[in-house]
Image (tube, rainbow, N blue to C red; front, side, top):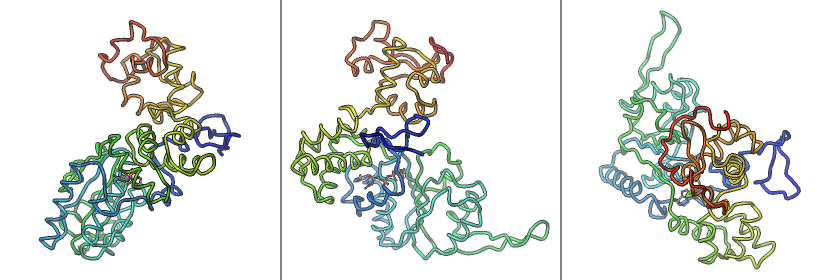
Length: 373
Ligand SMILES: Nc1ncnc2c1ncn2[C@@H]1O[C@H](COP(=O)(O)OP(=O)(O)OP(=O)(O)O)[C@@H](O)[C@H]1O
């Protein structure tokens, strides 16, 4: 069970054992079912309203327009990329642009081929089937999906053992939009059935500014350019985080300010929620502090580092590390985690001479670090 500290803010939520509740971080790129409800109101509905990802937007626009002119369903679409970048939003846009209904399910919900057969056999002609987390589907369902995507047919097996018979069931043409954060986990035969693959990248600040202005309008809150820019710069390239920070800044502005999202409100609110100017939160900074101040910049083994910040190794590895590595604050070296010059600078510390060239080290699985494992 998690409990809120007297500060009452998500970045401070801790489990009963004292560890950080990683799912509750204000900079977590993943979301909860409750937040999805709030997010739904902020989703762009058409491609023309969707800022950022210019290549994917243009390519997808072409595929959809051509399909519309031909009057037949487009190729199946695979969208890959980290959480919170707009895969679900784009799936909804595909259906809206084609003016067809959208059926939504996910890999974890389809554990047996029969679950998938039930969904596929109830699709109408031209319907768009959104399969979120497609890499988490069972193997038997995957095999059924190949056939259905290619031949618009499923084989329904009736009976068991030697007497079992496969009865082919014709399906009307439809379009699968698959979404995955782990494209590499998809078996090649499944990946090959998608005629169009779009990879979503992190957004730049200018696109996040556009998204935030639009979201502020939808939330009915006044936001000026400096306020929005301040939030965009701390949003880790992720619209979901940008929208979440905007809602917290709006809260602060409504309670302590004039109700307007400006630079002052953004700075105060984000300081309160422990998100610094680079978008790092308390856990990220604790990792950097431990690495630089206690271990001289490393290399240090993951588990030693985790103990030093009072977290599980898994939390450090999956929650803090991806962003710190992506932004070049830490390196995964053969001997453990090491700080880069950027980490020392971020903490306002002088960069030690032996660390100045850390960026040249290869990124590999760690071995024993200078300070153990
Ligand atoms: N380009 C964009 N413009 C405006 N809002 C966006 C954009 N991309 C994402 N968002 C917003 O960010 C939130 C998360 O987007 P979405 O659910 O589509 O991400 P996702 O990639 O499907 O995430 P997950 O992998 O966790 O399912 C939504 O509120 C959505 O409106």
